[in-house]
Length: 409
Image (cartoon, rainbow, N blue to C red; front, side, top):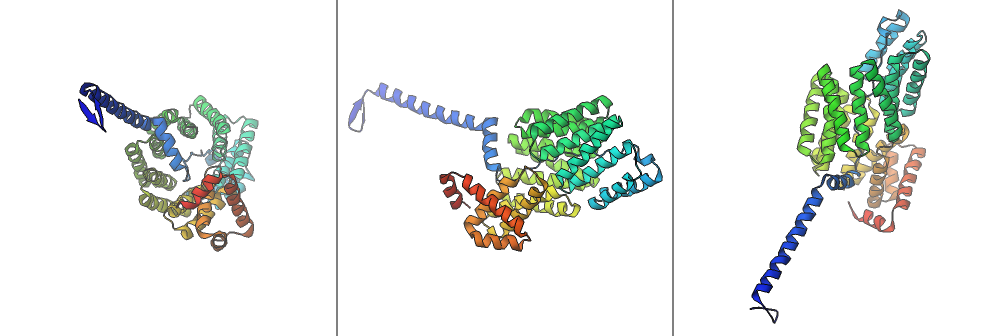
């Protein structure tokens, strides 16, 4: 017999019941652990923590040169100077030279020059101007029956729609570009569009499908000896593995991509890879290490004038500083990043940056926030626009969430 709390139980029955209860508790714990470790659950949990940060997996924009190198001197000479300026990241100078070449260009030459102009505008963060250039290039490619010019125009239009958050529209254009490149046997372009389609499926949440496209792009880039492509594809696969929670694999690929990009002098790739490594550290909660990589990426993005990269890294630095309760340092960075993204029309990032400004205002007050944003160089129109977004976000929050937001740092 067993005596418990003043009551007497048959020993066999008591110990059997106790063992059954313990087994039930252990089973419940195991079920909870296994559920938490499921890829979908793990991704959902990581998504919830990562929404605070600005995400950017870079699409590749495709250059198209057609026969410009063999064109008449009045076209070829400004084109060659423009291409040199473009590769030196002097975007505005390149655009001026391409327009000079267009004054004497004809037929498919115009398709190529408009595409190159669009690439420059894209790098400057002028998404609407870039899309207009790419769409005009597509119309002229159809008019002049320039089949080779259609694929880059289609693919680059898709890149812009992707940045604007129009995933289905972006996928439509990118898939057309992929089909066209395959038909033409242009394997370099095919690798570019495979990777770009993979980025869309990534953003749609189908990580396995995204990885399939990125692996195909990687194999093709590797077989072609396209080192820029290999670095880009490694970074894309790293991004997918990050979201799968396989951080060791993600870091391995991103570090390989970074080393390759540095080795070949691909500065745009270096920016992307540094940002990618920072994002992995953010997922792991290693924010000091993330901050170091974001700051290095920001410095290089500024040097090459890559506006969307500047906004991404600047915004993430601001959000990290807000998390570290350094609100006076965070607010100007968040505002500058938000200004770039709003001007560009990018859908990726503004909500996170506005949420960061809400947090800063909670700690500093509206008056001090206004002072900091003015000191950061915001004009009155821009200041009013950003404060209006802060107010809109506050109004959209449930009452309980608003109170929680004000208490957390």
